[in-house]
Figure (cartoon, rainbow, N blue to C red):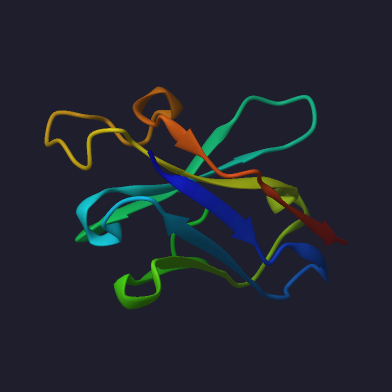
Length: 125
C-alpha cells in the first residue's frame, strides 16, 4: 500500500511558477514510478510526466516543467515554469502497485493504482 499526498498548488499569473510536491509513504520510495497527471474541469485526466530513473514529459509541458526526486525525503517535486492559463487543473501524483515494469505505458492513468488527493493549480491570464 502506498499513500500519496500532493501539495503546492495555488493561484498564479501567466508566466509565473509553482512547485508541487508529492510525499509518499508505505513503501520504499526509490523502488517505484511516480507519475503526475492533471484534470481540468470537464476534461479527462491528462498525463503530465512520470519518473523512475528516466523522466518522460508530455509534449505540452516539456521544457517548462521539471521533475526532481528526493528519495531521502520520499518526495517528488514538479517544478512548473512559464505557466499558461491552459495549465489550470487539479494535479495528481500517482504510483503503480508494481514498482516498475518495462512493458507498462506510464503515460496512461490505468497504469497507476494509488492516487494522491490532488492539488489545484489556477493560472490567470
